[in-house]
Image 1 (tube, helix red, strand yellow):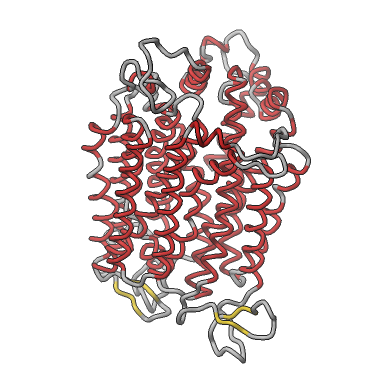
Image 2: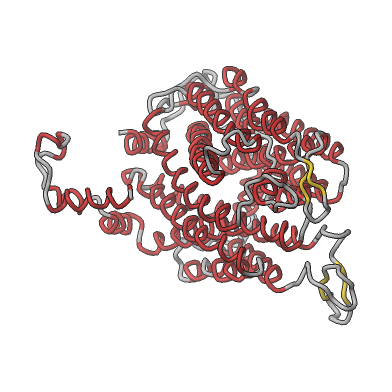
Length: 595
């Protein structure tokens, strides 16, 4: 009803323009129809095509609607019905498998470094996108067709796969409900999404720097495409999972994975052909960055494999934090101190928000037999309805951030958004303790809590990191450093999931209907520690690791010691470095977003 009322107001404005005294000064001289036409989506796309070309606009839509929006949402949401209802894993294994399959997001720096250094057939990006797509398509095809939870006369009730000689059946199972193959296939899908995302992101970032006069229009198109893709796929995931075999979802992923090859084959990426030789000079120019990217790759992969093959949660916890501590120390060796400190803080805010999807997701969707007085949400509600509302709420969070924090300092933005995120987590505790019953239904409480307020809070917490990363990347190294910092944040999420899983086991919280274990007495305390207490510990670190600068300040120059060479590692002469084109570009972005 609210939406229909909004549409009615828009129509009324078009048919009957408001009186001049109700219009802002900039619009008093314009006819309302002219203003709406000027800022219509059609006019926006026409201007965007004139600035960057129709082909590149199509490439971005294919990437961020089809891959980052729709395919990534499908990849994330399909894991719950597939693992818990089809494979019938335990909640803890569901969390471990999801952590393993998300590892490629922590490898973005390595993907970017390899593609920049080793061109294939004269191209730095296209062959890697094609290779990543093959992994994604193979993953979706096998997940859709292999009966990993089916029965077979030669293999009893163990999941199976036909091996290379096609005559014997080899179980890809460690024990009941523990599939080895499924996480590997999800890993391949995640590898495609991460690869396409980082390579196309580097391309459009370069084009924005080349055309700073276009402002933030390209970023707006990227985000709009992403949200449209996420909304579109959210609308179908839940109903299909409720009424059909969860493997049906993966048939949708095959065309979504393949579609990116069409604009790539038509030259929409706008990549020029170069000589097919290894760029050793790039490694020589940035040796520490490449070494750090290699360390991060080994650390993330070692951490992921440990989560699959190591049974002890305490061992995984120790391994995870040993690797994380080593990488943080290495970042201070490879990066300037100001940049390394910002990177450390953004890693910690990810790592200290301990993720426990292996407990939360099963509790909300468990049956009456496991959680007698629980919400018993269907996939349609939990994945579709709340997913659609959550996507819209995240977009609202972006707008709220621009309005509230446009003149704020980074320190204030970080600690304030952390507090908001912590307060939003109280809804989970209220629902688990059943304090809202019978006054407020479960679906209403969850929708206004986790689906709306928590999503707005999460987006508010995410936005300062995006702005700070863009401000501290040294000139000439933006793409690789941006990928490096993003990789650290994603590795922090991996650490948070392993730590949260270990804490849940230590507190005796386990929900596994297949194994007949439904122990959740300590779940409210677990949520309090993971989502409230631990994030609050990062607030004092804001005043140590984050520069005392405003979001609109030139953070890079203000945080560097006098005479420091912006080419990362050496001490320069007393000459001030020349201004970089990025400065004017940042001003354009700030004016477009804040004013």
